[in-house]
Length: 386
Image 1 (tube, rainbow, N blue to C red):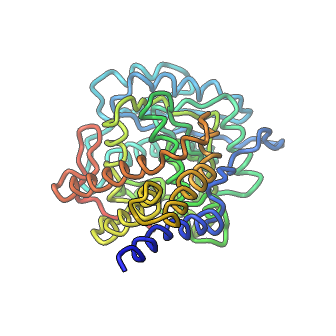
Image 2: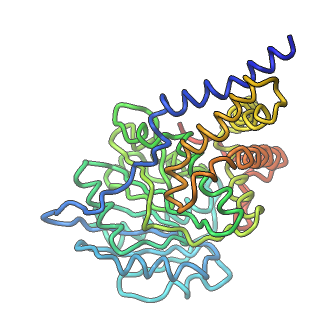
């Protein structure tokens, strides 16, 4: 009886992966990208970029220069909000007639630091650049290739989008980055299948705050960032609000890249643990369900392959998933990061570590240290908007 029960457990991942590959919007294809050639527009709309920056002196200069060097025929201005940095971020941003640096006021109650900085950037945009049709929200550690804005605006104008977002290409050089970064992108696509996000008749919404173009009229129609001022996962919260009244699009970037390094396990751990439990609505039951799901889908297959869960049928099922379905499904994402499909066999280890990070995120929240970032803690932040 025990062997039969273990064999059934070994077969569950087979069913799960058939469902993921065949009935989850084709998320694994990683094919939601911008066209290489943007459309030709008679007039390119003006854009204002808003960059919240807190202690980002090492990267903010690169980010600003990459924006000011855009091959864009419309007006483009950049606003950097120095969020009370103590490392010379404002000075490192540089000087240009199209650049405005705003010194942040003290953080008021009920706001996250990033959104309060963004709010002040938007106020400066209203005062100085009312003609801008779009706002480009980007992080202070993102480098944009010269054609990225042209392609993004072209996509929004051609398809009538109120929000168009790119998940920046993360660094993937060291061992921990190769093990965990493509897996992170793969898991995010699994959670939010980009094709479903991009379908107008589906409620699913998501965005990547590192590079997010928003139509200004749509932003004002949903109440601006004031409406999500306490959200840690602010990009997805804003996308959900915008999609209720218009169209959104989320894709994978090739030329927009993050400069942030993840040389050690702790670097990735802190990135994930900061908001993972928030993503689950701070719900203990959702945490338990997530850990169980990760175990069944990713951890059970190698256990079955090693014969821990029964005889040859279980071993065959384990190998079929571990060395067949996982590398097959993750290959497009791995290819995007220049890695062999064989790295797909490491997904069980990556999933195990991400499960631990999620539990760690919950522990931080329960101890009142949830959402720690740049010296601030948001332990009482509400669940993400859905």
